[in-house]
Length: 358
View 1 (cartoon, rainbow, N blue to C red):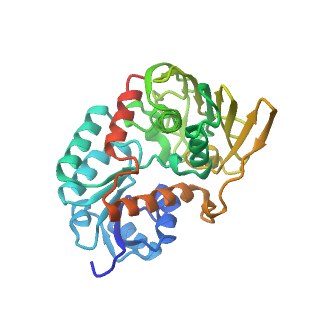
View 2: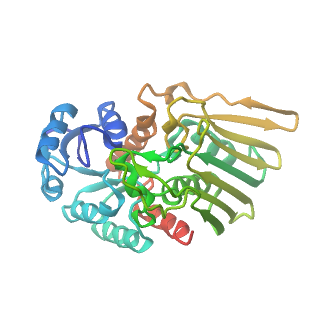
View 3: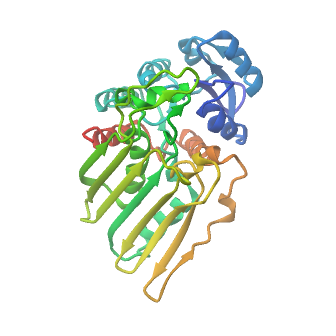
């Protein structure tokens, strides 16, 4: 391309709704390092509408045509999880770098195939585990690494979602209630939570878990059609880390009150807590999406004290886009320097292997 900007093509850029419009489009628009060059949807009419609305140059219904276009350097995949393998493969075979939303695939075997192929082709990959780039998470990781908590002994992760809090749910969410979709509570919120645990505290060497389906009578709001619910809406897990620390995890859907997240980390010399703000937007309570606050407590000051975060890490973007924009920014640095610091397909495969037995 004639520009130094990284040309991005988005697969799944619905103009009406979806994660691309909520997160990726604003994130890219805010960055001088990227240029949205192409969008693709399943219908020509919506593809053209997306091109106009989002300011892209090209519109496609054929993902292979988008991936092979010379104006596209990076393909971003934001479609339903069962379609990830085919579309990521199309991008890889076109020699393009790939940013795929999490979960990468529906099985660990599929993710291994994608990771191996990307490595063989020498292609940069990124997977949407954007909670790592939250300013509060970055600060917490630095404090832990510098010994601010002493030796970490345990942690507790609690996170709830409003998804499924009512009997009637939007049609576009119906597929997530099928455990074969790869997009249920365990895969999405569970994957993000366990990735964050390992990012902050180190590898999990043993994981035991129980799941439950406690709400089975959902219907599609638009049609009244009943949904056969097989994906768990509750997860309770205990993880043992490589350093011997114990982590308890409780995640659930159907929160009737305000959804929230609280992660407490206990060490020999103090505690940290990552806490979601009490937002009216239920999306913002999810640990990978919302703005987290960081609190600290020590033996000499046992009350929780808010830890100030760097002002230059604040964002004016919509809450869904802020961490995604930070991931994109680091990916741009990787592409420029040849480094591999963002979570890629190898990281995704290891995470799939960890959660698949659950």
